[in-house]
Amino acid sequence: MITGSCHCGAVHITVSDVPATVTSCNCSICRRLGTLWAYYRPDQVSVTGDTDAYIWGDKMLALRRCKNCGCVTHWEDIRETRGDRMGVHARLLDLPDFDKIPIRYNDGASY
Image (tube, rainbow, N blue to C red; front, side):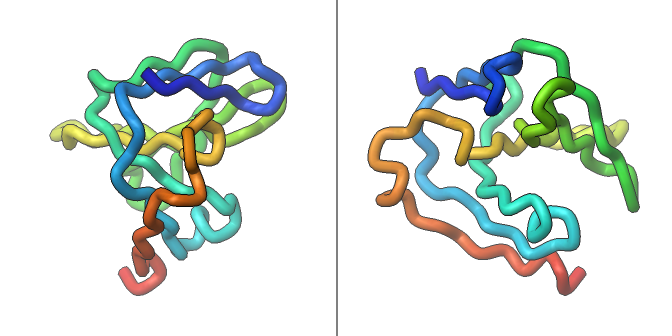
């Protein structure tokens, strides 16, 4: 298990394993947040602590952030026909050899 937290420590994240890759997206929100996403099935992730959601545009995802320090912690699929994936902000995880995890670039600005 890999653990992590927001800046103030009010929100704790546990994931099942080290991600094979992390994703840097250039969509309008991700490029502003500077997030690197690690993708997991929801049953591979535990998030505890108070978060609130930011939902915009096509209303497919809820970006969750700590209510205290504001760090974006993860996103959830909120569509009625939910997918089997969620994103965890990998920069918040205590990952061994983080700099050795390959970064995949997603052109989210083009769609």
